[in-house]
Length: 424
Image 1: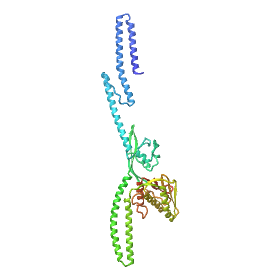
Image 2: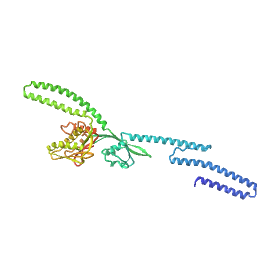
Image 3: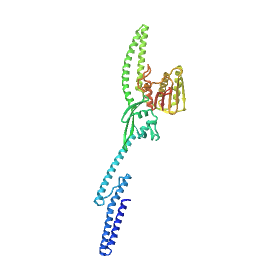
Image 4: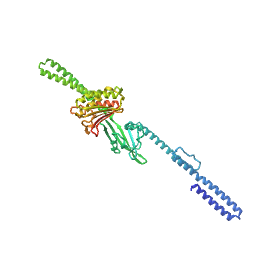
């Protein structure tokens, strides 16, 4: 029963009893009876006025409650000229104004934060309490190659990406730098925010590959240019002296020794030029090119070298033509170096399989596997696992492919096959 009904019921019962008692006691005394009826009437009028005074604030309160329930913070009340009622209205209006201002501030902050996250160059992954993905910003979608909302409510552990294992292992508040495939470097951090009083985790992934490579290239480029300058100047002068001396030497043995010294200087000069090529590598001059035909030509070129070592070099084409914007000369250099490395890794009787399709190129060999401790350093400048290696070939391959925007990896898989994958 509502307060309004209770009040009306009480007033009706009280006045009905009073009227009955007046009629029963004063029905013979007409003057007192009339006066009593007038007093009862006045009492009813006062009860009605009190009803309005009590119920009107309740109506205001109920209207305010409905507005708050509907999250409408624009409803305000005007003063009615009654002290108690006006005090209640002042308190309500002040509360609504504060709620409206706080709600507007929260919405503006939320809108700004959402825009900031969407525009961030750092991948942001928001999780629920069970570590399922609830939201990704565009950079994270690009990282995981998500083109739709299929990731929603999907466990992070089910996402196929090399970095996921690192994301799962990082603790709240922890930040660390990881390297994928020996090339891609990421800084990952796990933190949390409060949602309805509970901590919800989110992850941030910042790619550092370009910055690290640029810093790395500036550092070793300066050293290489300085070394090349000094060696070229010295070799030029020394060769001039050797050539003049050889023209005056009659002893054939001494003359041959001078010739060998000159050739050695020329080889040293060529050696330094190879290092300088890394620094001078131009950006690709991209034109439309058929990567399937390009691959076919390089396989035919390298088949002679493979057969000479007793290897079987096979090309599998899963597409007739695949056109991409490439620098043909640079990509030829990439494929030659990769297949050459595969040939050097194999002993007679082994296989090299080149498989090309519309999205990728795989160069497999079942030669010597890559040790796990070496795998992460393969594309590091001047690092080589070969006794006479200079660590230049894979560095050039890395720079050319990255300048083309192609992703790649090199690792030995569980079956023992070493695979160089290029995604074009």
